[in-house]
Amino acid sequence: MSVAERLLIARLKERDEQAFGEIVRLYGDKVFSLVYRMIGSRAEAEDIAQEVFITVFKTVDGFRGEAKFSTWLLRIAANQSKNRIKYLARRATDPEGLDEGTLAAATPHIAPLSGRIEGPDVMIEAAELDGLLQKAIAELDDEQRLLVILRDVEELSYQEIGEITALPEGTIKSRLHRARMAIKEWLDRHTR
Amino acid sequence: MFSDFVEGTLVARDKSALEQHLAACIQCRTDLESFRRAVGSLGKLKQAAPPRFLPDIQQQIYKRSHGRFFGRRWKLFGRIPFEWVSLATIIAMLIYYIAMLHGTPVGVRGP
Image (tube, rainbow over all chains, first blue to last red; front, side):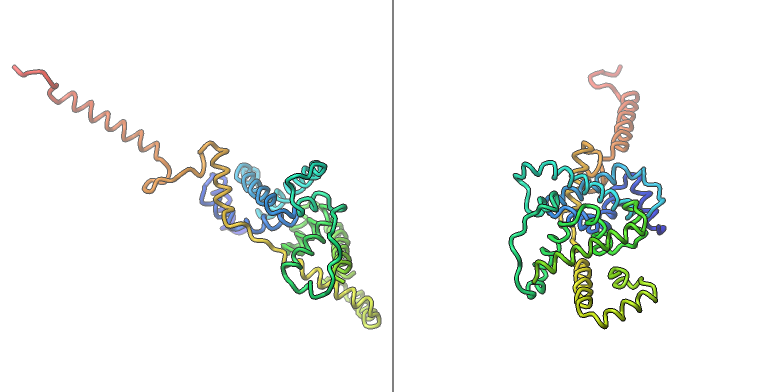
């Protein structure tokens, strides 16, 4: 952890409002991105990502600096996302008010897909590719989805991923490989 | 093995064996290419936080802390400076008390 980061955390522990603003500006996109890709719904992701930073503001005294601050923050984001997915899955029997992305995240293995997408040119369109990838990762289980997001979307090191998930490197690598193969196969099936 | 190959962490002997196999197997070459494309595309999924993200969080904390944090700031003093307001009140009362001691009471005539 850099000296600047240490000072920022020390200010945050004193509940310095400006320091909190800097923390949100520094890590807001990363946290939002992780949560959004885990959940698949913008509205839910905004709500959870806000809760993550509120939790940080309340519990920063518990951060002892053993890991990187960003790792600690992303662990909170990952846990809150998983909890919300469980909550949404419990509510899935009453899906009123949940959008397609949220339902896909809550019920990844039974999410209906609206037919096959014909033609490889579809892949060229960035927006459609985004949608396809989101559907592909929504098919994974929570743990696999988290690993793919941390490694391939957020580009974290295996050590950082280990600190966030508390999994050994070998387990991360084998689960990540299975998840990547599942995404590849899903894309192969739906873009031919 | 594809993951290690794509990440460049495959040990030299395995890498060489895989490359030899790929040179001869069109199916595996196609699979590797689509694997590489899929993994590479995931990097484009980064998503920026909404523009009102910080103000919305500050508002939430303001509400939950009953105004203790992220309250409206005064232009000149920042937060309402209660300590200074108290001190100013004490000084004003002191001045008033001294003025009362030394001044002529209103409505009382001299001899």
